[in-house]
Image (tube, rainbow over all chains, first blue to last red; front, top):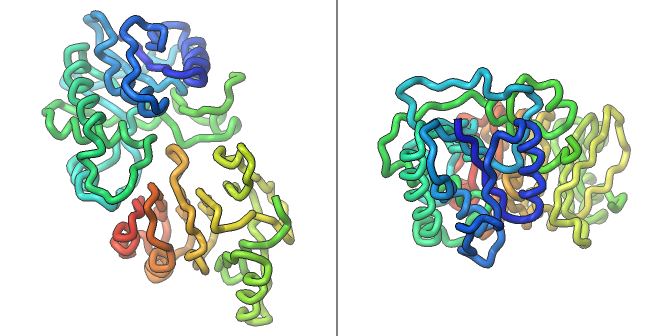
Length: 211
Length: 164
């Protein structure tokens, strides 16, 4: 399994160090120091999220499945991928958000209705690098087109641009998708006690940098 | 943090929001004398953006561990970006029109009201009270008794995203 993350900016780089340590350094992290890095936007968040959307294009080659993880993820499990598996036919997998969403614009509503849930992009499995690059190419395109796509009269949270762009991108593809259990990215737990008491494998938090 | 009770929970499971102490006094004057007035308590987490310092953009939790507090200052509701009131017994939100600054903070929804006792009528009333928004503001009303039958279009037509 090829593990990959993107960390653009000091805080994400710091958090990616935590991720590296908790999964025994078996992950490649794309940072500003990479020769392929370019500044796509002067807005740090937009810039960082675009590189996330485009992450597969920073992987030179691998014959293994690809797993992307957000830089602020971490695990308390010794061998976190020991029990990870997907169906043989699965080409793309992720953890969905819980709940039904009603949105003020039709494009994002159509994307939600198409998938039946909102996609969390923090932890994603790709069957191979070719599929990862195909999805990322469409994903980064939709991300750059976001202002045209969302027919709302107002701005949209920058933090959410990447996930809606991914959902719209996947509507134009035809991959076999598998929904993963939330234990692979339990982003809802916030307190140290909750996290330590949980059976989940991966967590996502900007806190607990001392772990 | 001020010690002015801008937001108070009552023993009929309603929550009153007021813009200042005078407005709160006026609001409370309409409540039957037999009612007790409680503030929020028991492991609640409130995100307050009332501060004007640099930290105001970063949500910081104020946690109360099973302690009933008589007066809790919660800043000025018109400045709240995000308000978390999940997993309580709240059955009614009053004066939600004062929440004029709601906005998602990262992936944190602006208004979190999941797992309360809100009926569809009260959820619709809340939606009707909220001002129109030009910001990205998500309301999470999952796991209330009125979740399935409330009219989400009241909120989405004002620019809100609703999660049920």
